[in-house]
Length: 204
Image (cartoon, rainbow, N blue to C red; front, side):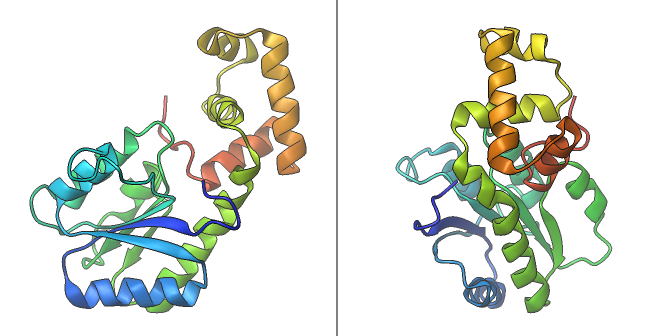
């Protein structure tokens, strides 16, 4: 995640000009400094996420705004690709269909689900995601890794084995996580990881 002084890297995956303008205005109203990267189809989106040509120098997004109805591999496939990224960015799903099953995406780790046309809702969703993710800026990649393991229900011994460190090292990371995040319990760490979109509700 970007530092507080660094603009957020935001990836907008959208091919419809009016909706692009809507997203740009929502980001402006959210009042979060950002660099917006626009791709207009699923193939470009997946190349950007994988950092494949012509996006091999692309930054890791801090936030993704994903339209479900895009050409060349739809948004559902792109969402699945984003879920494979190790430190995947939060994703706000954008849909034209009020009947779309929002729960399936939220359950699978999406930060929010927005029906297009509601500028205020999108602005609020962006602010909420940024707020939830901001504390991650104080953590090291190793600490974030431990947090994800904890949130996925792994015990200290299992985390130590997976990370090839001692149990005491894992406990030290956990204590530092609690200190930096201002959280006193493991359950609190799990709740925070869910809000910050680090793990999924249906993860193993």
